[in-house]
Image (cartoon, rainbow, N blue to C red; front, top):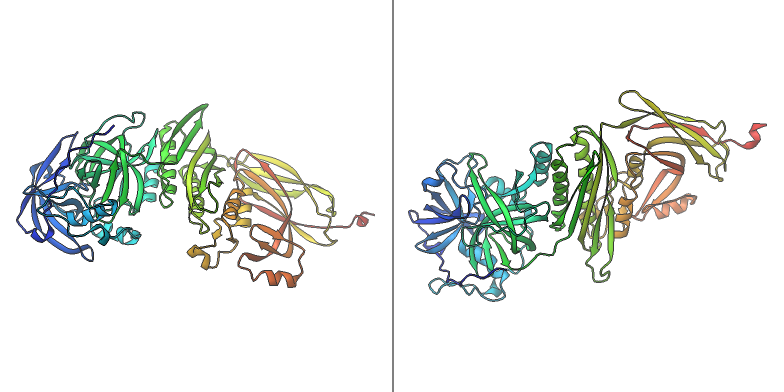
Length: 605
C-alpha cells in the first residue's frame, strides 16, 4: 500500500554549531498539499528550557507568508534546515500574544534520541559528516511518566498543541469536551476530522514538512490531532519535536492529512486540517519527538454508539484509542459527538441510556478473562443532566482502569440512549403505610405519592414482606427514594480499590468501602440502580457489619468489633430488611421517611 521513499543520508546541523544570525528554511504546509519553505532566522539558544540538559533553539519566521499568523498550532514538527542540514523541529511559541514571530525549535539530536529508542540498531540514514555519537545501548529504553512537568511546560513554555478535530458542534458539547481535554497535548476544535465514511481518501505524502494526523478514534466518527512530519527514512517517521500525550511506548494510528488553511489569531492560531487514510502507527511518544512506522495497523477496541429520538435511530461504529489514562475521555467525547450530531434533540429531555464496556485481563494468571462494566442509567433536564451522566461514566471507567489488582485492557464500548422530549422529574411528595398493622412475617402495603414539575400527581403502590425475626416494639424506618441514590449509599459512589493503588492507603470516605478484588469493583458498580427506579425500603436500626458488598447481621457485638479491624469491614447501624423497586417514566428526586412499629398479632384482640 505504501512504497518506502529512497533512503537519503540525513546530515544534521549540531547544536554546537548553531549561532545567532544563521538563516535557514522551515518546511511546512499552509494550504492543500504543497510543502512550502519559510525563511527563518536563528536568534539564539535558550539553555535548559525544556528540561535540565534539554535546550531550545530560538528562531524567527521572517517569511512574509506567515507575517500575519506566525507559528501556529499544527506546525509542531516542521523541520528547520540550514545549508541543507537538519537543525531541528518547530515545537513552541514563546508567548501567548507574541508579535514578532519568534518561536522555539527542538534540536535534532534530542529528537534522534527518541528515534534511537525505537530502533534495534543505529540510525542508518545519518550522513558521514555528523553521525550520531551515542550508541543505542547508551540511550534510554523507556521514558518515565512526566505528565505534571509536561502540563507546566505547556502553560509557561508555549509548547505548540496539536489541533484535535472533534466533530463537535459549538455549544455545551464542545465547551464540556474542552474541559475534559484541558491540560493534555491537544487543542480541541469544533467539527472537522475528515475521513469519516471515506477511509481510503489520500492526503499529503508523508515527507518532511507534510501534515500527519494521530487518530484517537477511527470509523464513522474520527477524532484526530494534526502535527507535522520532521523526517522520514523509508517506513520510519519522526515528528512533532515534543510529546503528543506523553505515553512512551504506544500503538496509535497515524494518518495522512491535508491542510485546509491556517487560522491566524493572537491567542490561538492553528492549522485547520482534514484527516485522510490510515498510514501506520505511532510507536513512541517521547519528550522530544514522536516516532512512527508506516504500513502497520494499530489493534484498537471497538465502539458502537446509537441515539434514538422521534422514532429515528442514528448509529456509529469504529475503533478508539484504549489507553487506560485517555480512554475515558475519548469514549465520552465520542458520546458527546453522537449527541451533537442529532440537531433535532430538544433542549429539555428525558433519556434512558444503556451500555457496557468489556475489558480483558492481560494478567498471565487470568488469560483471556473478560469483565463487563454496565452503563445503565437515566436522566432528565437540560445540558447539565447530560454532563452529570457522562461525568459519572468517566468516574466509573477511571475506577475500573485504576484498580490495582491486575491490568485490564479495553475490548469494546457499547453505548445507546433513548431520548424523549420534555423534562420528566418526579418529586417524591408523599409516603404512607396503607396496612393498619405491621406484624412480623406479614406483608404490608405502602403508597408513594409523586408530583411532576407542573404539579400533576400520581401514586405508586408497593408491598413489602416483613421479616419473621422482628420483635414486638421494634421501630423500623420506611423510606422512599431513587434506587440510584440508595445504592450509592450502600456501595459508595466510587469504591476505593485496594491492592496496589495509592488510594488504598487512605481511609475511604463515609459510605464507601475498600474493594479487595477486581471482581468486587465491577460488582459494586454494576449493582447501582437507575435514577428512574423508585426504591421503597424498610430499614432496621441494628448494629451490623458491612464486609465488602455484603451486610452481615445477627453477629454478637464482640464478633462485630473483632471483624471491624479488617480494612475491608465497616460497622453500620442501619440495614435494609425489606425492599421493592418500581421502574417509572421519570427521574426521581427527593426522598421521604417515616417510622413504623412492629406489633404482635395478639394485640389485635
